Each structure stands twice: as structure tokens, then as C-alpha cells.
Image (cartoon, rainbow, N blue to C red):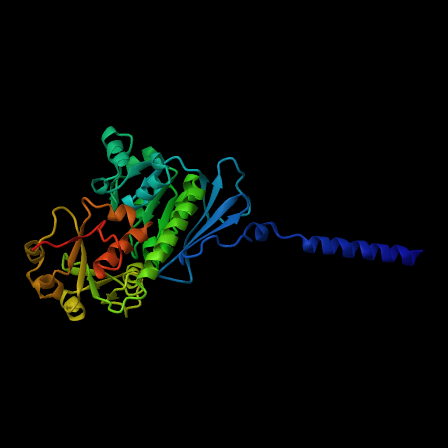
Length: 376
């Protein structure tokens, strides 16, 4: 009898031990969801309990995260086991401060422009709802992005601030506000589709994730179709970009999304051998040495349309580049074009322009959306 009791106790204990060991740890179960993104290298989004865990990688230090957020619907309970380093944001948000029109443009496309209640660098916004809101006072002008007016942001008390992070960026003022800061590094992605996929984060924030997924899927299909059309080109024109600004010539690194887009459009980027995903800071002489014999010169201006005289007024040495005298200079006047508002999340539109410039006969419709050929 004692032996039977002993065996029953052992069996019961073993069963309980097995039952306990088979129960997943609540935190492990919560984070077991797979990354929902397929192209971004710097952003991950996965289910965590009733919310979405968002992790943004540090593009300058692969061993660290830039930031982590838990987006939790307002009608759901916030998990108790989250890491204290994780910033919790309730969704859908009702008030955001946008540090750039890039994000405001994407939010408008998602049908949620009303949540943008504050902006910095207001003079650069062309979105009608933002312009009208600034005039009426419905949207606050929070000052310059590098020196925001803290009092206005505090008074607004937004759910979050959306800003682009740059290496060495000074953030003391905005960090002291006690408002969640969504640190975007989409500009450091090394593929156009990787950057475009960040629209899913804004969809999650605004409660329009299905719309964001649909937009991205359409962008992806269109981009890949255009890219495939340029695969067969036999001649790839050499491409240089931008111009001097305050003594420095900024160009995209050879491993950047812009470099990839130029290659996808059938172009030969002058800095293709560079391995940087960010910007290069060059002297005029360095650019001349690398790109003097380019076929195409792509640059952006703000204000008046560009002419040959205007380009040499910027720097008389600009005439030394081959495109200056061969009709190969193409510019986008961002004061009137929607380049900045559209292309980060719609790279297929920029890719089409590039293909039309590099290979004018490749597509049946070669009307340019953002660029114009420089006038004599």
C-alpha cells in the first residue's frame, strides 16, 4: 500500500512538473510573433500581447537598438512585463508633431492628416491641410527642427513626436519635454523598398495598418515591374548628384537607397563603390575627380527654376562637368514639386523619372513627375 501511495505521489509530481514546464513564459509567449516586415533592415514590428512591439535599429552601431516602442490600442491593457526601456504609445494616436513634411505626406495618404497638430519648419510644407491649419491656428508652428519652441509643444501635449535622426544629432531640448519621440531612420535604409516599408509603422500608429499594407504592396509591385524593365539595358549612363552647399558637396553613399535606385533604373552611380548608407561630405575637387565625365547630373533646388547661368552663379566651376555642356543636367524644384512628400514612400514614382532620364525610349510614357531638364 505504501508503495502504491509512493508511486502515486511521484507520478502526480512528475505530471505537475511536466505541466509547468510546458507552460510558456508569459513574456516569451508575448514576443514570439515573427517580424512582419520583409524589406526594411532597420525597422521590425511584431505582435506582443495585444499590442505591437516596434524596434528601430541603430544604423551607426549594429550592436544597439535606437529605440523600442510598444503600440497598444486604447481599449487594450498594457502588459505588465515590458522592459522599462520600452516606450508605450496608445493607438490610434490623435495628436502628432511632425518634424518633416515627409511623414505628414504619408499620414495624409493614410487618411489621417487630422492627427498632425503641430509641425516644425512650417515654411516647407505644401500640403493644403497643413498650410490651412497653420493659417487658422488649428496646427501649431513649433519652430525650427533644430531649435523647436518647447513651450508650444508642451502646451499642445501631443501623443508623440515624429523626427528623423541623424548621427550626432542634438536632442536635449525635445527629449526634456517628456513626450514620446519616434526616432525615424528610414533615410538610412539601403533599398528604396526598405524605406518605403516604414509606412506600415505610421499605419500602426494611426489605426490604418491595412491601408498601409495595401499601399506598400502596390508600391512594391510597381517598383519591381519598372526595375525589371531596365534590367536589359546595354548602356548605363554615369550619374552624379547634388551640388555644393556652404562649401560642402553632399552625395548619397554607394550603399544607400538612392544609389540602389539609380542602379535599378539602369544608371551607373559615380560613387557606387562606396560602402556607406548615409551621406558623404566631399569637396568640389573630390567630386570633380570622381564625376567630371558623368553623363547625367541630378540635383535639387528650391525656388526658381534652374538655368545654366544659375548653375554657374552657384559656382563657376560647375561648367567643368560634362553634363553642363551636353544637356545632361536635370533638376527638381522642390518648392513646387512634391518630391520630398512623395518619394520616400513611393520610390516607384522617382524610379520612373530616373528611367525616363537615363533611357528616354524605354517606357511608352516618358513624362517627368519631379525633374526638368536644365534650360540653357
